[in-house]
Length: 194
Image (cartoon, rainbow, N blue to C red; front, side, top):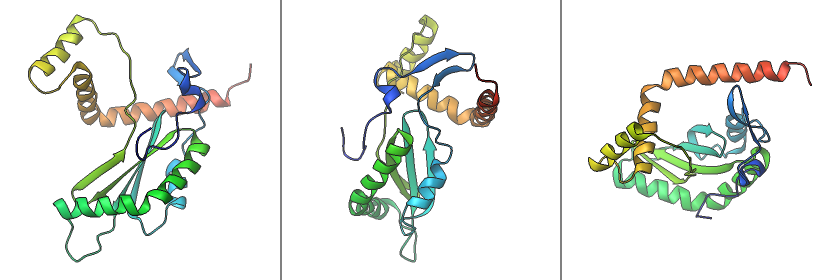
């Protein structure tokens, strides 16, 4: 286990998870809902730490990235911002571990941290979850082209780059899709028990 990534995965993730194939795709049945995670962190974090907090949740991880308050007249940039983020990381480590352990007990997901100041951002540690896939030759050729062109170091990097690119350019559509899936989950939970 590295640096500041605390705890492990939820019970369902250790052996491949208690996942079932349904109409809505792959579902993680035994993970608690984390809809209130942003509110929980806002209530739990010391107010002096951040001016803004962004909490992102998926099946494996809760990523908490806060904007540090600028304590001087000018905005901290470059090396000064990196230094302040580093100081924040060192000075708050014990308390962040305590908060992360509480959140991991509540949500059964790994908690990772990051900070930003001005135009500088740093993720302290975060989950790089393996994703298995089978690709046919046309898709493999796309990845190999990205590797051959020096855009990515490996097929894995090329696939991650491609996913990031789609995420950036399809953000609105993906948001609408997530909302629709949430509505389906809500309707499913209100349905009759078998």
